[in-house]
Image (cartoon, rainbow, N blue to C red; front, side, top):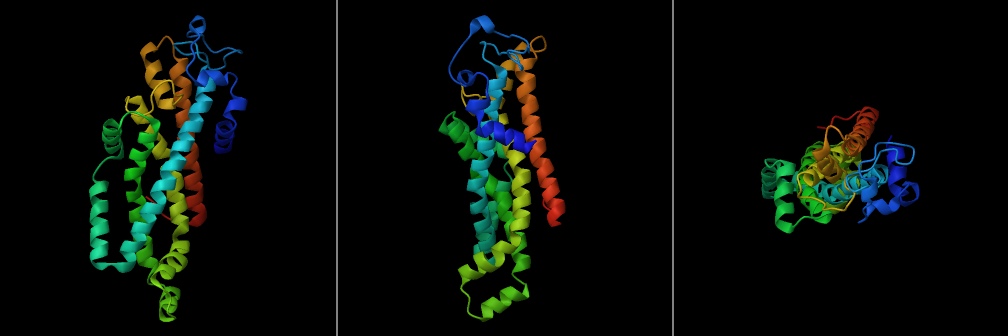
Length: 259
């Protein structure tokens, strides 16, 4: 499922039957056409092809997850390893800040930041990434505390290895498995938060073909016109399900427990 979604996202302009419908176009004469051979997913309230917009929406959702994780993983892992390695006041400061961010629901924080910075896809991504690091910080902190006691780390320390060498050459590579598993599981959750923000009207703005926006606009025509909301909603479901299945498979393969 993930490979199909990824292929569709990468080659969206070539795969989408009506790529121009991902932009600012209207076809009022084709408004709310039901699914057919010409429009397999039907058309929306202004006559745009739902299938084409869903394909481009998949690209946006996968890009959001990738950017959020690319920002939050390095920050969280660095802070977690630093807190576990140096302990003392460094640990107290980092972990207390993490506790503060952990007390804030991601979607609430993202809504506030997006509301302050303005409605855009970029601001939504920044808002989610700004709070997403705390889970990786806690994971890296717990793993580093355990790995720090291993004999090979003690041996490297006795041979005169630097702090940076111990943190990022000895400790970090041995905690990659749980980090990879958590990243895979978190990708789906990040997409859910991103689409929820757009659905509530604070994320990406029209005519961006974002799945949350598509569901939000199409819900006004339910239940008689069901296709503009059903297919983007199913796409969100399949994306999140694929990430969860991959994460569960990796968790079993590596034999790690990640929450």
